[in-house]
Every structure is written in C-alpha cells, then in structure tokens.
Length: 111
Image 1: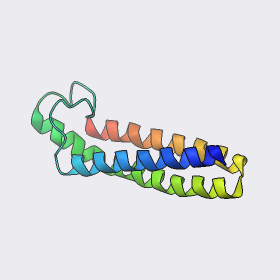
Image 2: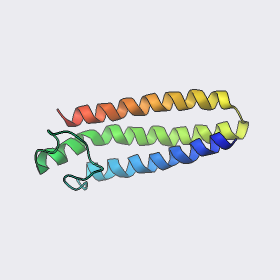
Image 3: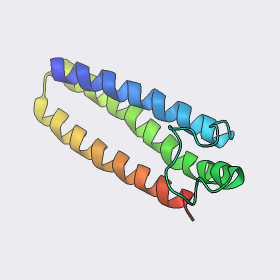
Image 4: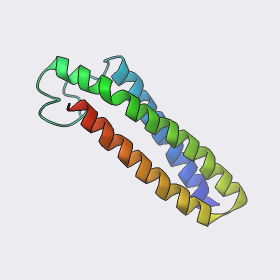
C-alpha cells in the first residue's frame, strides 16, 4: 500500500509540474534562457526560436501531464487493492511513455 500511495503522490506532482510547464510554454511565458526550458544551441539561439520551440513542445509535455494524472489514479487504485504486480507494470509503462513524449518534445522543438 505504501508504494502505491508514494507512486500516486509522485505522479500527481509530475502531472502538475508538466501541466504548468506546458501551459506556460504554450503562452510563451517561459523566460528566455530559463533553466527549466529546453536544452540545445538551436533553441537558445534567440528569443523567437526559444518561444517557437517551447510552443512546439507544449502538446507533448501536456500529454505527459495527462498520462501522469491517469497513472496517479491507477496508482491509487493499486494501493487500494494492494496489488504490487499491477503497480510495477504501470510504473514501467508510464516511464517509457513519458520518456518517449519528452524526447518527442525536444525533437519537435529543434526542428
């Protein structure tokens, strides 16, 4: 039960983090050169490229936020039924999907 509740809290926290990042990126509110921004010389070349890259990445990061929110619900359910096998499968799937979305976000931003 402990691991399910911990996973629920972490997924909820990451859902909020990714959601706020995507919302701010969509509106061009991430300051130029910010440490929470995307990496890469092409992105940091000038402010226009910075804003365009973050707007391109926002849908992918927003999707990662939705996945985290769904996973938080699944983790809470796993904690209630005390099924660690389900929790391990869920965590593995979530980590792969979120990593893939963040890689796609970075690639779409540098095009």
